[in-house]
Image (cartoon, rainbow, N blue to C red):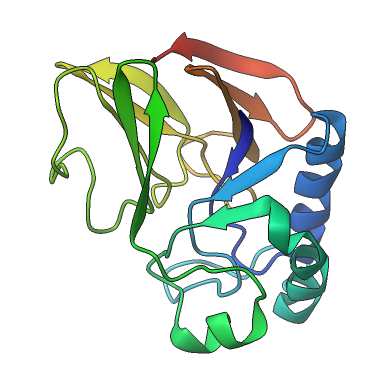
Length: 181
């Protein structure tokens, strides 16, 4: 399966449209969203074209193409307006002989790992900084932020296909590629 992985849209209609343009370029694949879809959060400035209602209108038609985990900015009211489930704290994806533990990153992260076995991967958002590196016996994977990149990064996403994790900017340029499965 091919997945476009993205995190931290934070209510930006502008960057949500850019993400959907990237999805079209990638072959209209299914998406895994790692939380913080609609609300910008109290620690972030408003992103470009902050318009949560427009983000809702952009994503709801794709409800059968979106998997999602809950971010720290999600609330039950968000589930009332979005047509796809977004309140799960995590999901697990197989990658060869290993698993990819997918979460937002505010609870489970490199400092507080979920139950994982040697060779497994932690795929998370929350930091807004893209990452694809091995730490000890685990892979730490982060697509960065769609709308509020940090740490000198650009708005971006990742592709996950057959155990290969590819970081890209929103224009589609490859930033890094690693095999995790």
